[in-house]
Image (cartoon, rainbow, N blue to C red; front, side, top):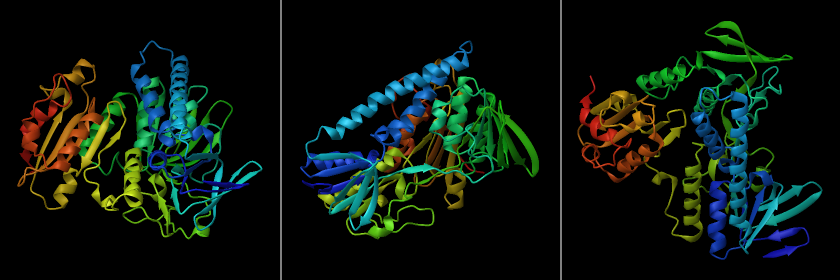
Length: 463
């Protein structure tokens, strides 16, 4: 490693301490390579998932589920936030030492900006550091999108990060957006005792899902006291002394909604602003995402992009897989690519969770497949007692199978433990395990996996 004055030369430069970046940095350092990790904020050591994304929000989701009706909402929320902060502080420290304790890793907190090919300037206050490397990895993630509307800068308007520390607790919460983030926070805050209204721009929830699945999700949300307004557009926010007043257009009609807090869950965009990508010859698309090939190589030689910054699905486990692809390029045979990904599952952490993998029934039929479909309400599944033991037998199980090959084409699980069971189905899809083999599998009891025995026994042709 060369460090002359305000310049540093290393083997690999990683910009952004996300899942893919930190894992790649640790792996390469373990092989003896000299690595520099640049992170803009010390509060983000470990990346989005650890600090402001998956882990802290699911911690709050859990505590919302544990709240009793006689718990005061405001004080219970304060305790939940304190537990969240304690946990995240511990995890951030662990992630810091994951790299800080490695002799071949240099850490630098500051804003990185390309000033040439594979060269960045890191600025922190008055300090400047120039870092060069033959291999550069951009792992800066994504940031919340914020619509340009009147009053949108009100202190009562939050994104998914700031709402985790809302003070005081919002008794009335308006959620703008009905994607995974919006629905997760709506379900969470309803559990904490808030009166929640979701503004959905579309005619129904979850338009990419089958109608019966979307209808079941809406039924559960409404059963938890959540109001969903369809074809609802936010036109502006007025900040009053005691509340925010949202001006809406709902199904073509003007309407007003009062709330103590507003969550903007209107999507996230790649964090590429002011990275100086043009100086390095790195191309971006119309959304600002770094353009990559199937091996995550950018348009600039020796520069790779990992995670949310290159667009596509925004999941921590995909960022982790991104690191494997780049590691294959740098230390292996280079054969691993994004095309290797098959049957990647997702989970939206409602209460209960909604997990998905593969095709919907509608997608399978559009492809001209000869399909069998099994759908059961969880409460009606006799061989699935676990949700009942946890006093939450809501939701459904829906599985789509190719009638000619017995291949599992897709599944939608909306029930207790769905985030775990979906991984088993995804693995079956990747390995060619048939629907019959899953149906006849021997599973622990009582478990949510047992639903496969009964539900797959009810496969029937689509009429």
